[in-house]
Image (cartoon, rainbow, N blue to C red; front, side):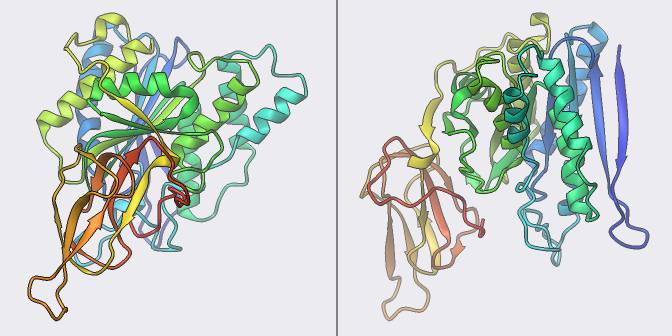
Length: 386
């Protein structure tokens, strides 16, 4: 049995206020492939927090059985700063109160350093372990941030880049399970999605900025390894793998869901060689159910006015271009119970809708994944209002 718990202190936020990160590592980090899993990077997204707790119990048992071929590091809460941000009760943990920045933005860029190493001729004989050490050296050379959020991001980066597989557990407002990943790793992303039961995998080109519009946590890892794949030093199957896993909606929290998600993740790690095959649960999964959608063909459909939104479609249902998927009941119009339709501008599947039904003009009403980019369609980068 090999288990290590570590506390990582962060700079103080004020007198007597010193946040910290906690890590749990099972297995031998110097043997075999490794995986890193974190939850709660957005402080108001909580399904992953419960999944991590179930993973802790399962991994403790697997460690005692000697079923961990490499090692797995879990961070049960990746953002103590955001989790502490409350406004009269509710947690407002997606953006930093200090500067308004999304907590899942502006992580270090390592792909440029990778390309320089490759161009110098020093990268040809480097193994995956060598590259992980290279990533650590690049991060260690960075000037330590004075701001607590910057320090937290750097610590999370160091933790993640030391591993082969990185899973960042999130959720959306009211949604089906779905994944974000690099196009180069679509096949592995689909394997993970099929384990979890996520029918939608959204992929983007390396270095695109895509859904995050600013170097998200998983892109830091994916882009560094994508540069190595593009250089021909690794294949999509042998390179490191990273994905953002959206575990349905904010209120989809139960022990049943969390246990199933935890077991599904472990089955995926067994496929990846992080765990022994004996560690797999053997439970049937919805194989072949996941569909890949290009992120740039997705549509964030805005609300045409303010009011109470009434949805006519459930997450996971197919929608057609021109189809009415919801109506907004205006509250200040001249007509009683006046309704303004919300129309899909793409053919695809409804992935996300608003949880809180009182909406404002221009707010995202729905997120629809499609296959075909429409002429004149705007970029799919997420706006700052959700």
